[in-house]
Length: 433
Image (cartoon, rainbow, N blue to C red; front, side, top):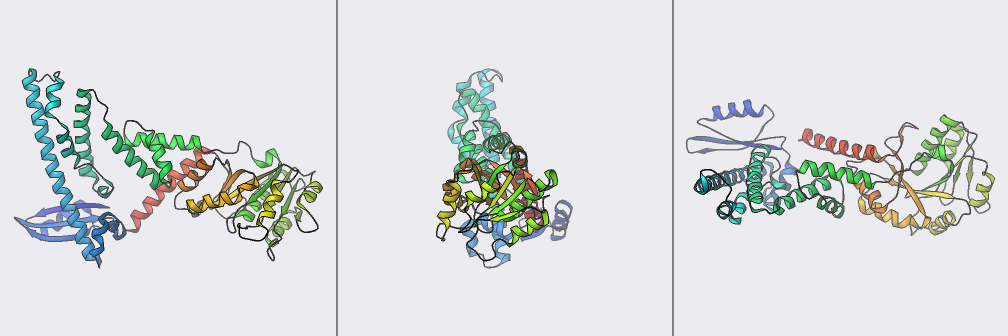
């Protein structure tokens, strides 16, 4: 959201300025008469929800959209006044610095102690009253100029004093942490990554954090179809276990044919729980086996020992459901090497992801599969989850097409996809205003 104030001798002239500089989509937040003419405050990409977030408690008194717009305009006026006062103060500081430098030797700034005595902490604190915060993100032009001025002054003083610019570093780290949280990372992880950025620009810290995130996300080196073995998918109902098995099976059959593949389900707790898996089996011409009271999991896996790849579907049970512990114990204690993977929906909240992980980790998890990537607004939550738990990501899915929407996971493409998703979300929010 871009907010701008216009002054003119007449309303017609002010509106012409708005039209020329802001375009036909500008929203008028307020207009009033001032000394010498009229003032109009306008906005592009105006979003009432964003305005309420920026105004905080002050927005509570706004019972309608017009009052909210007036409050937004008032906030902008106060900001511009603060910017003006800070700019004047910075100009005074620079003039004092130049005068001291001249007295110290005809423009030679070698006497750092004199300059430092003129540019004291109070001066820097006054300058920093104009430093950008999350509430001023929409005023990019003025703030970018002020940021450059403040940075220039602080760099000069720091260099002359021989001191590190701790305040500036902390400010960049704070903004970096905020940006990482917008990306979808949890507060603790975002703060941890941002603190590793010791100095430099925000953009440099952002790139460095993304590299560290990619380095911290583990993925499977080979695909299951190539390596072979027994793989089980566990997770809550609705996470996409059965559909993912269908995609894996179809992918395998297209490459190697159906003869060396088998499907197994341990879900004997729900009525008609096997129907979808049997549909996949019939379409792909792949056998489907059901674990029940008369056929244990190990007995079935013994029968299928000649198959290169066996995929096991499980019931989406929680710790309060009957059979939950029985099913996970069966997987964990099998004499076959079962590589159990947790299926995590990218649309889940981070707390739910963590809860699901705690619920199923007794099955000796060796990795995970990320599903519903296409439905998630941001992907940082999922990347943060796998980074914190250390679970390697084997695959991710981003649609319902079988098997096209199944992808072998790699760290850098996953992080790049998450960045693209954030940009897309920001564009959608801008268009929706």
